[in-house]
Amino acid sequence: MILRNSLFGLEQFVIDPDREYDNLAKELNASIIKIGPSSSSYINIFDIRQECLEEDQKGYLSTKISKILGFFDLIFGELKEEEKAILEEKIIQTYKNKGITFEDKTLLKNGKFKTTEEMPILEDLYKELDGNLKLKLNPFINGSLSYFNKHTNVKLDNKLIIADIYELRRR
Image 1 (spheres, one colour):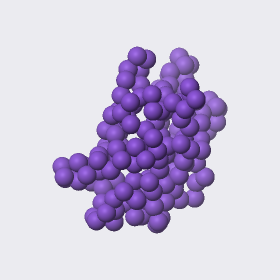
Image 2 (cartoon, rainbow, N blue to C red):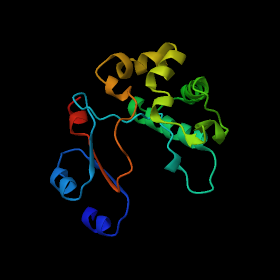
Image 3 (cartoon, rainbow, N blue to C red):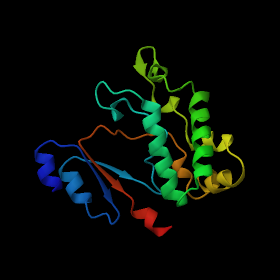
């Protein structure tokens, strides 16, 4: 399916837990992003990319917040409604600290979309939190999962992106 979709020029994002797509990725000039403690590839979950909305859509921050909350649901397990509400409030504040609000124009700087370095990272949210949520996030800031606390350093504009999560299984 990957080969067929590549022939048609379709965008694909493949999660590879067993490193079984390495050779295919090389043959198709795919971007391979290794995610794990020994990797030097990072993706910032707080990045808001211009391409994340369809043409003529609005609401970059609203769309991103729902995705970030989904990420936290995955890593922390089911969050209580109160925790989700606190997280959303703190995520909004974290973006506001970087000058990003629900006004899409705040994502522009000198007429261009802000770069990954101008986006918050997990540590920025961590500084806003207290109590149990801060404790839950600590391994992602100060511990073995701190590779999630980085700015994106890989190009995400390839038609085929393979996310190698092999090292994540070992945790």
